[in-house]
Length: 348
Image (tube, rainbow, N blue to C red; front, side, top):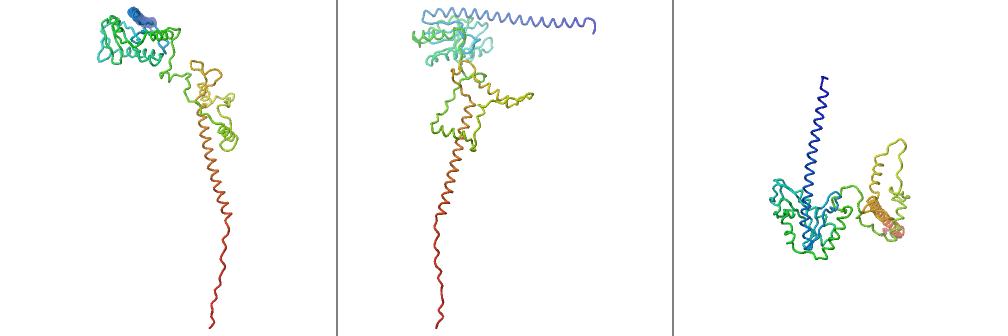
């Protein structure tokens, strides 16, 4: 290695680290400025909405987003015109609606309008059905005070200066008593210590405990229960039946030998079916029925039906055979006619 090569390499690495830190610092500064501008915009929008309380509206600020523990709703307004979820945006530059789509400086803001719709849907999910249709999603633009439009997906976009007038002209749909009921219900849910949980199709692929919506097993009458127990005791071939696989403990693998893939699958399936504590946990003293038990019960019922059909066919066949044999043995012998001898008269 030539003189100075090690020092030059260390200098190059230090310069790269310094450039990376400068980029991270600039990004952090931009993020801080954006959050500060957003907070200032939320404060200005909240001040405008608070003046509507004299007209019968009730306001919630910085509320929980139902089903999203790390997200929040800027403003939720409940009043004569319905339930409004208002998202404050302190955007700069040129903001317009082009072909029903919200644009900022030529870039589409479909993500923001979709987010407002999701906020409204989450709030509607915690209301009773007759109030869900009254929820609307709004975007309030702080730096575009006179803007008033509606996107193609149904989101109202209004400027800060026209916010109060746009809310005041809404047709009345709620009485004052209903306003108080809905407001106190939302305040209890959305301003609590944690975000309320929602069960929807978005959690279908997430692992974890799930509520059991399967129908209850069919109730069997007493004679059918006795027949079912007898068939289970005899087994499919008349031999004593073995215990179900789910009730018998899984045999332990011998020492020094790895468990097979089947044993691993059984253990993992058993672990997935194990009841976990949560919102939809089964009450104490009851065991939640898993899908494996229902499949085994269905297979047992099908096997019972097949065995009954086979026994019935065998019984009918045996009865027919015995009947034909009895008829054959009981038939009398037919008497044979006597033989008649014919003589030829040859006398003259």
